[in-house]
Image (cartoon, rainbow, N blue to C red; front, side):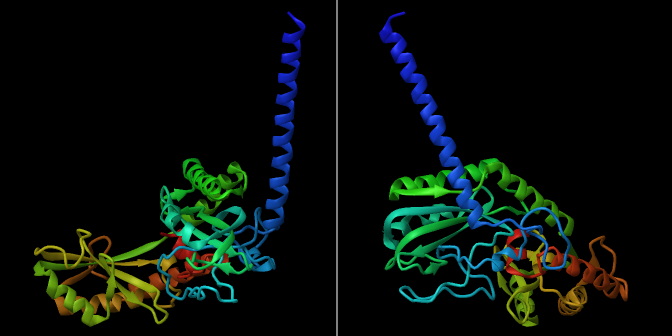
Length: 360
């Protein structure tokens, strides 16, 4: 072997060692930054104050830290009670922020401020990864927090907040990889760096949240048997006259704050105004984690169901197809109070934005 070959081999080994050393240094730098952004806590992220110690971060950590996460949101519709974003150019910060109890954040830092008008065309690709929604937040070049991108502002950084779990299950490795790939794409397009937590830690956090939600996920239903098919238009008119409002293919019975208490749907899942066929069966559904806590949550639905049954000349039965026994609503409501308390203790208050996010 010649001296040239030996020299080339030595040079190659040296380059490999330099690359490994640089990667190790960069990984440590990223982890230190992420730890400063998301301080550890002795509480579980799903447990509220007083719920007891457990592994993980506290749900209260979102408010315990004084750091305001930079954010950028798209133009998705707001949930009832959700604060409206401020006007473009305002000196006020948007109130909505990433939720560390149920979302994981990838941060994108631009080398130079980027105009919102240049970012907006890419917002649609940042709505979902697989079956998990993403929210986008940003910080302007004037250090103002935004829950939505505005064409007339410039941004120094943005965050992708990825939901850790919902009714489709915990965040998967594929979904996390898709979110990371989209962050990398943004970084390449706009000369930015990205930072985010370790994949294994993310997947474990998602699995814990999914286990908690699975133990608390409850729905209670009733059925209206209309007998002979009744015209959909007439059924819809009766339901609206009773107090229901449109909610996609379903109808919703809203609480005072606009949050849905329970829903009414056709048995075939179609919209009430779809087609010319009649309706023979309707479903009333109380989605417990997504409905506001109420001492008569089920009893209220029973009252409305009986009123509808009278108006539609229908029979109201339980989920076993049996006539509803007198007083059964009181027993069920007592059981639901226990579940409402458990949801509160887990940091997932019934009807809250967080609960509606993970129980979707």
